Length: 144
Image: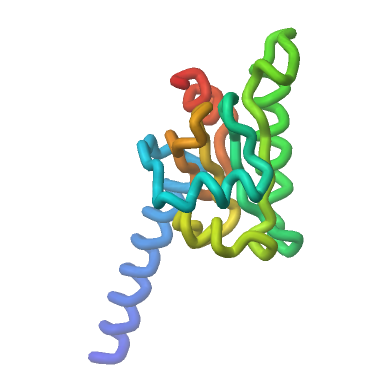
């Protein structure tokens, strides 16, 4: 009887933890983090361009949900320029976690996909774990 009770409690706890983690997936968490002194250098090495807001998303060849992130980010970036040149709108930067593990560690990436919104000074302003919701990503970019 004790074994069954332990099993039921374990299943209930695992279910609650799973539901909490699932509810946070794709939602924007507002941040304001410049990170360490080396973060800017790592971002520049990965291809970030200062002077424009950036949607940075970490991915990998083996990451299935990363394809959905590409679609959402592309949709938001293309729709956010409203006829302006791409140079004036936010830039997209996809970084392979296997090619840039030091940057991923510096930014605290624990799972894929993970997306960041960076301001023109390459300061982290928002973080999204999982596949971002297009409306939430648009609103994070509007606040810059």
